[in-house]
Length: 85
Image (tube, rainbow, N blue to C red; front, side):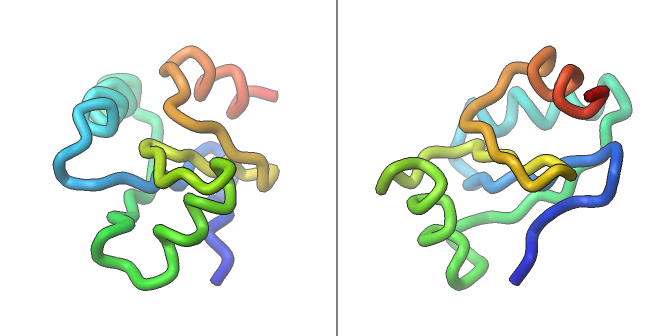
């Protein structure tokens, strides 16, 4: 499945217990940045995708940008810069 988001938004892989995920979601909401959240514990195959993107680690939040690139635990500023590029 292709998780590449539409222009101006991101796809964020997360878990319910991840504090870094909650922080980034709060920041994105405050800035009005759209995102699709996918819980890697609920959606089959996504934990393996996150592992592939992170050298074998299930590190969240892992974000996919509209250009198809990914970042692990990006700051709000990183997300804004990558979306503006």
